[in-house]
Image (cartoon, rainbow, N blue to C red; front, side, top):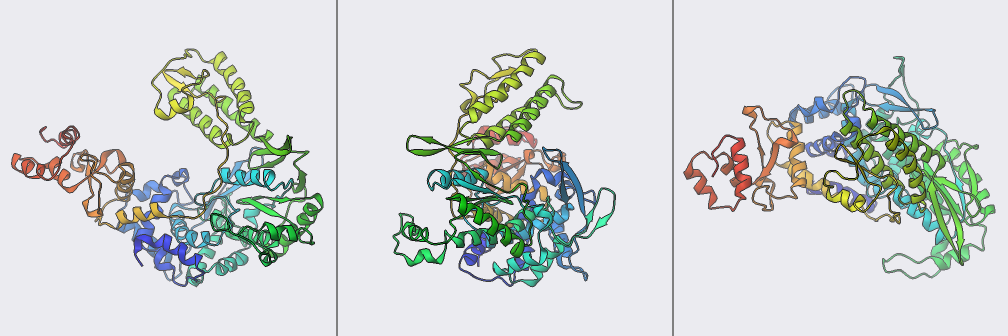
Length: 590
């Protein structure tokens, strides 16, 4: 089995129902560990300290061999076995003011969790439901909302059950979770034992007290969202088995559509004359909605699912927050949107808004940030405050533009923001620096666009509604395998920072030499050049590195005319770029 295809291979084998009994060598392989570092490096959480006070910056200075050896020894090199360090408990306020407990593992334990996640995820993905969208590759909130719209408009399921599981992450049953992983084909007892150790890692409270959990998976752990999906995948499949994938439906003749999937309409029509409960699920992590056709079916389904969650998953449902909503009369809330259907001719059409709670939260945050532009925080200049405000506007618009009424709400936000801008900021202009291509496409035609200190302030009220896109089925780990091919190439005793930046450059340069534009065909052809040599104080930082072919690398460092002439015969470089690099290393311009 080729190493570079390992993740796709795991997915395909799991899809075929294979069981896995020897996963630890994959978890502790050099390629998997280095890829894990790459995947967590850019997370903002990687710079948050755990109970040992370390961050990703302490790892990036180490050589690849040191990191690989450290992970292997920590996981399986000691007599006591893997013992995660205490998880730091931190509470952050929710929008409603209540505290949300986070568990922050130490950075080495986060790296180890990522190693396990990379091997576990492809196997689980082969078994997960198509109606689950939270924290999965190629899935998003947009896909969940698209599925919701489909159930309301096309399937005409206008009774929604809004479920709320009480403290889901704090109440996951450890024994049940391990059994579920076994059912999914994870039959490596050493692998499962180390997952259990992660779950039972002690929690260091703000008071300094250590608590030893008997249930739950800490929010903040890298592997926690995947484990949550494993727990609730059983719910997805149970709901589907009641109607969508009920064996009864296959007893009726059915054709296949253009994608080769069975058209089950005949079976569904026959089933509606029985006492079977028609139900469909749309789930995003622990937040899920059940869609039913009638109020009676919805009430019966609510009772059945509540009882099933208690008996099978040992989870309690909040009776106060769980309710049945007729969306022809009232709004239902899901993932920050409030959704209703209304009549348009002979059809029922979805109308969606930003939820009241979220619009107020966004308004307060944007107004607060505009005030910071007027009076920047210490050590943060006005320019950086503008960038942060623009990032907030862009993020909010990207998330909520799938709401049908997005323009109405963004105009309300724009009025609140413009009041502050007009009253508190001087020097506002309608002209400034040249917009980037992306900025011009998005805001170039807006008359709301304003500039301060030559920098654009993005107009929150200028946004186009976007029809939510459905999920693309199938999973590919091709980008991971391409990274592994580069990791596999010898990097000797280089730092983690160097190895990872080398991969980033490969993707940024689209697999081509920066000087000749030629495509690299093998990893051996890739030479990573330090623009400012390390002997002259150069670092392994991304900005100081560039990928070139072996011949170009020789040309950059060549100090004699004979060497230059010899190598120029074998390539056709961009002389301007070549001379810029030669100048930085102290060589004469050609």
